[in-house]
Amino acid sequence: MKITIIIPTYKAENYLLKLLESLQKQSLNGYEIIVIDSSSKDKTVEIAKEFTDNVIVIPQNEFDHGGTRAKAAQIAKGEIVVFLTQDALPYDDKSIENIIKVFDDEKVGGAYGRQLSYGDTNLFGKHLREFNYSDQTIVRTKEDIKKYGIKTAQLSNSFTAYRKNILLKTGSFKDGLILGEDVYTGAKMILAGYSLVYTAEAKVYHSHSYTVWQEFKRYFDIGVFHKCENWILNEFGKAEGEGMKYIKSEVKYLLDNRAWYLLPEWFVRNGMKYLGYKLGQKYEKLPMWMIKKFSMHHRWWDKL
Image 1 (tube, rainbow, N blue to C red):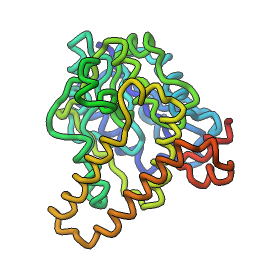
Image 2: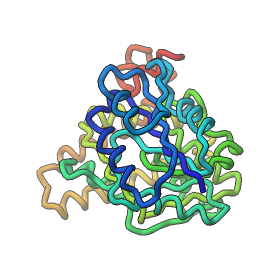
Image 3: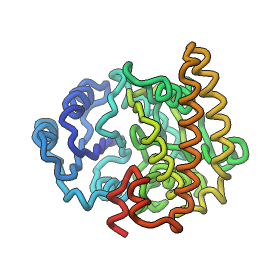
């Protein structure tokens, strides 16, 4: 199968060289690479052009989580399109090979790999990766909605592959989403009868050490996404149940790591995430100045 790897970038000079060098060392080769950059002022474009002729530069204000990826997928020559974010790094030389091989099953529309935390990630960031990305491969279909709920549609464009014809058939990535274009697409594929695969063998390093305020902003935007695309919750179930599993797992993780001193922060952090999510769902009742202050993707609101 022909493969295209797509990497959206912005101010990526501190990440991109390592990522592209790692892609050169993969066991699979001969794939197309498309870098689509949002008018970075650093050396991002210069670095990208050393590795591929397919470097597309767009105005920063035209970047859209879904729309930009959809445009890149449309021009991709590959039967399988693999998306990576600029801050992801393949774990070994088989990362691409391992995510591609699940498409031997023609019913697979999308697959995402395991994300491992970088060494300097804080305990909250490490737990997030371990909770969401286990060492067990899972195949999810429409029949699994009762079992997995909203996680049935889970994908992550930090490291996700799609069968291009199914991606296009199910509507590709929606333009105008604040975030969640991967989950939106996963939900469409599941409801159309295709399967999604979480493949634990395909691994990348990718993690964040968000502050409490950054967590609040991130969950505010998730609340906005669920409000705008409420059909996802209607079809797959509300997110609160999964949230309770998470916070119970997180406190156990902190105690297992003898980080009892982080319990006050755990309490505040999860309270702020819940508050952010609920405010995001009610964003229409808030003034715009407050929305922009609460939102991680504050430039998105300028497009409305």
